[in-house]
Image (cartoon, rainbow over all chains, first blue to last red; front, side, top):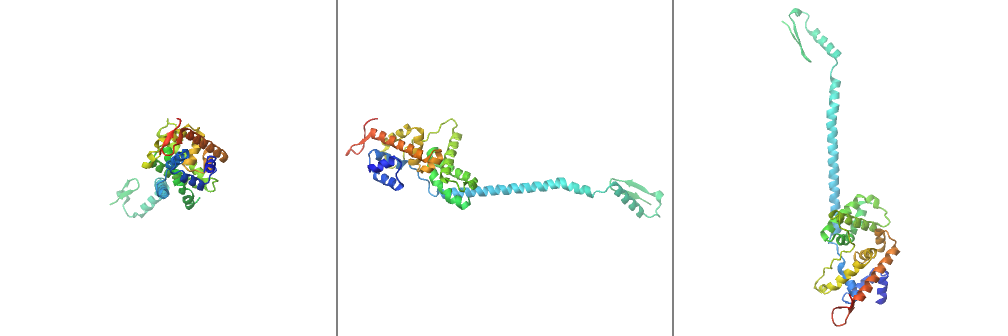
Length: 137
Length: 176
């Protein structure tokens, strides 16, 4: 046992030898006995299923992260749609709006539709923004 | 590192880092929380862990740093001691050891810091030489030498303090 204790002191014992020392000195009240019993009682044991609990915590973290990513992507997509509605739609609307020349041409066309037989003297023309009203007798 | 590799090689170390966290943080509940936080932290960098030359050593190092951070956050002015000297919790049979154990605690506290740390990591936390070398940044042989010195010191002090008198059923203090 002395040889084993010397080996222990030099840090050269294997796990099996260490177990043997612990066992040999379990009920001993000698100096080494105090030491080995102290070590035995100082060793903390992890709670049961700790590995499983940690793995579950990681899985839950991953799910939360994925949910957050989905939320960010959805928010970004909504923002993109909103931006397109604000900036792109008016441009399209502007593109559809007629120029003054086109409006003038349309006016001419409309006027030409009014019968020549109508008495032009009794006409009353009212110009609105986009509408021209012609009252005849 | 894949999820399965992480589970097999890293998460499986949770039970080994728990005693370190419990010793450093002083209670099991905080230790349990810390282990989960450490594992999530490691999960985030799992790609870098693949092929690490001493994965367990790295995990222990992360554990120590994480616990030190927690302690600093809790009480920035308090300095951390490797060994706080918690009394072992045992059954009635161990009550009679109480006095002897308190002497052992005092002996450990007398050790130089580097020897104390290695003694605690090896003999109490159950780390391997290689893991301690990674954690402390020392060479394996140096770790072995420091451990040997620490154990010698403990043995000499215990021999100086105690002798067992056959038949009395207890310890007799020779010298304090």
